[in-house]
Length: 284
Image (cartoon, rainbow, N blue to C red; front, side, top):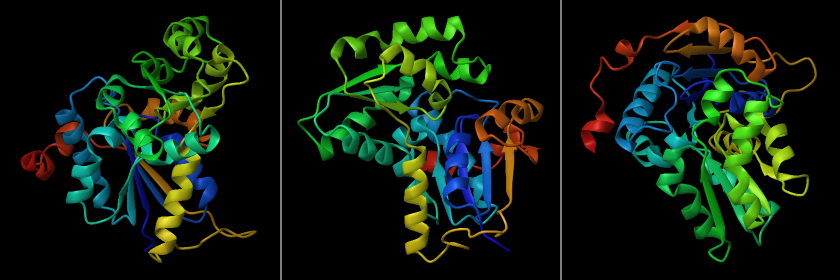
């Protein structure tokens, strides 16, 4: 049986990573878990985020994945070291690929980062940028309303979206940022609205494509890929989705993220996820 690539997020935002990986590695199987009952992770404590992320990884581990992608900036910022230590397969995050792309786009800065409260509070993006380019100025801005806005299905041209973005992005515009990292996998769905507020001269860095390239490189080096690239007429790998709440809404909204039907979807209640003691939490 073909081993899949495991991917998880707090809700639907990680489907932007699923879409990028499917484009890059169309022949590979994908298993996705969206913790829709407990979204958003961005307003929760690091301990809680680590526990939720560990439960997601344990669910994905049942499918014998080649690797697991934490397609959640909050989990990548707060839980990745604990997850990587405890899991038997590689656990990849989204922060380092996004930072590398931002510095390649704008090596002199300043670089803006918009993300959830937890991601900004963790300082993960700032530290990652400082490790590679300590001279580059970083301006971070927490945007706690954007994940619920995306999950509600509001369009980029919604006046409410525009008003919220104008308030959130004003400090970045005032600072004259040369590029902005979309530090949450939900935010690409608001890219047109963000670009309209910041103007055409400020590139927006979406790490999903960089993550897909990183997954391909890591699994290729490990000799795990079913196919390096899909040729003409080659079968597309299967995908399946698991959620902790409201699979009907996931099907409806998930299609907008994927550009394809989000099927099949299976409900995994949170009491099932938390039934087994969490080794990561016990170790903290």
